[in-house]
Image 1: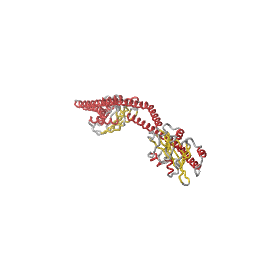
Image 2 (image 1 turned 90 degrees about the vertical axis):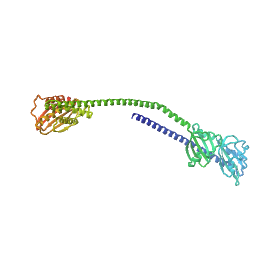
Image 3 (image 1 turned 180 degrees about the horizontal axis):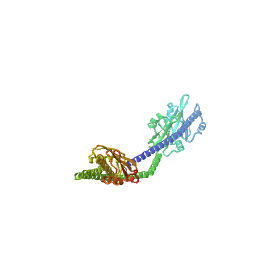
Image 4 (image 1 turned 180 degrees about the vertical axis):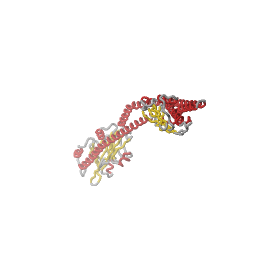
Length: 508
């Protein structure tokens, strides 16, 4: 039980600790997701601002150009002067020749092969590019372009480009932990911009974001164990930017957070380890003590069993010896009356030892069970066919009073058999024991025989002297009455405690 209780306590501790660890881990995941969703909201808002700025700039420039595309450089410059740093505008004709550009030397670069031009030439009205490495500056840029149509025909294109430095501004404003990212991705999976910067263009068409998550929902979050760009684990939130082909993405790095979480768990374990080890050590010490006590109890039980066996053997031998003495008495040449008296007395004592032997009663004995055994033994030893009636309460008799009580019963029953039914008549002997409490009881033995005369104050017969001596030994008094038979009544102590209580019968 001790080992089971110790194991149960440890198991309970492990279960509770595991529960709190899992709960803390789930709360950490929830906080990471919440932070990621908050970040992507900011990125999506700014991406919407970028797209709106590009669309407004494209329309204004197209308007300034006029129907014949003869708008002057000064008017165009005034149109783009209000654009933020890092935003450039290009205008090229249908032959990919530069009409206007906010970057010097732009005319030296041919963009006829760029998809943001060829797509418009092939009929698209608007186009949003993926990440492009600028041939002029070498920067990573993404471009919004608009087709110029005049007289119903393709007349050229207007482009607004943004450098990916703008993503660093987003990232800094969010105060994201190291390793976190912000990205803009075209709806077909082409990376438009990212911070930290990638090595070059990247197609994510086969990424779960494009193949699994976006088809289910326009916004959401998921945990990525390894990024395609830098193999870091992040919690990623995404959101489609309304009325654009842009998907805003924010990835919160989880390594630092989970490292801190693991360090916190380790710190808690360091604090709890001595307590747990102390509990285990204390439990093992208790188990050791319990085992030692169990071994001691086994030794004591073994000794008790041995003593019990010895006591039983002693009482059995005493009973056998008394029966042997009875046999010797029967063999002696002596008056029959004396022989019967001796046999009944010896039989009463033998009955006590036989009762103790059979019932393993070495302390208090129940008078309810003992008295019938003694009475039957005496009647059997005397050889009389007399009926016995019993009304015996359950009263405890200690070992110091068992033999005196048995001898008293023996003498009373013997006297009844000898004198009450001396003329050979049949009859009955009634034996009663009424519990008086405090270790005392009232014993009555009555018969329906011829009765007896007045008893002398000083008894002369051995039987009466024995009765008087036994009653005195048991701290009591007695009286004989004769009315339709003889009745003996005595107030006796059946335990040592009963001697401290005065008897209720005044006659002795």
